[in-house]
Image (cartoon, rainbow, N blue to C red):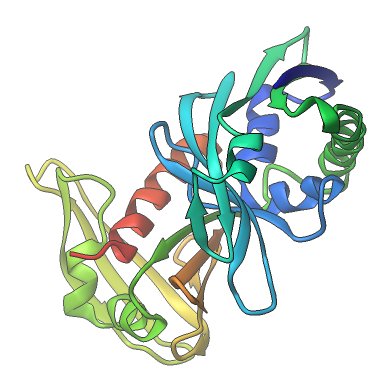
Length: 287
């Protein structure tokens, strides 16, 4: 293996460069420098398994299977590639898998003055593809620059995702049946959802009580449905006028759930992502 290092100074804070990495919509934009249709499946929490793949026309995927070994917001992400995924099947033992792994890919975000930040990337790759990967990374940095300039970051939707062995029909029931909502709609074990009301129609409202178990805090999380496609997608506007969409995509391995929500301005994108991701993971886990 050959370790390469490339760096680029962006006119952006580490927080926004972090979003370019961990948000699937942003990630898909700049990784076209490596291959059209590149994406990841999973999340970037430390210790989690994540797949860097391309979907094919059958819904299967091929690429790398990896582990997130360091996640230190907003400065360092380290990923260890441990095997290949071919047509959805993990491979860590073949000669081809051993050609590419084990290998580390590390991102360091280092502030430089006011609103500037170095993106420093180190990656272990087979020496035979060194020149190709260096060129791809240079193109990727240009696409990140383009992305940062072309969107309004403070209001751009945050995208999270989760996979489940449950079907879209089963997940739809969890999303829309009040008694089932109460079983997953909380971000941590010291919170719960003791009450849920749901009027599932365009213009109908849902009201979910989000409450601390020690009764120190509670609030009404509510919204109005704007678009409903059974077993496929659910769109609504929250009480503070922020828009949210949830998409269910059946795959050979189960269901991919993609959720997009407009951010609020009091908390960092990082904290919002963590909370919403925890709730989404509760929705998709098999009990």
